[in-house]
Length: 129
Image (cartoon, rainbow, N blue to C red; front, side, top):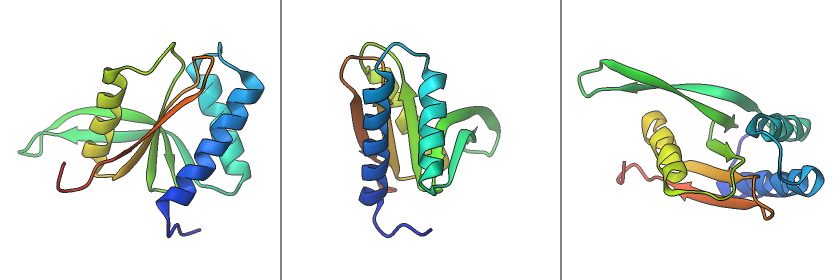
């Protein structure tokens, strides 16, 4: 499936996350929400990779470390999941770091931990990387 419009893909993810939050509510471990979102998105025909590895390099090509993004959907969208009381600046920094390292433009930060579902979308253009 090719995605002409990233916003359509984000809408599907948001609607699915909302349905999961409505069903499971808050209070579960992050892994439960990761598995639920993977399961439901895959059932809808989307390609979803869990714990997708990202290598971070220094400017001379030296490997500095490896991240694992929670979900990578359709080779276009990183999703970082949280199960805390609220999203914090370090969560945003983490997702933006993943986007920069992988040179991916779009990411969603989703927090299932509060009484209300929190979803924030980030776009990292190549000029701002």
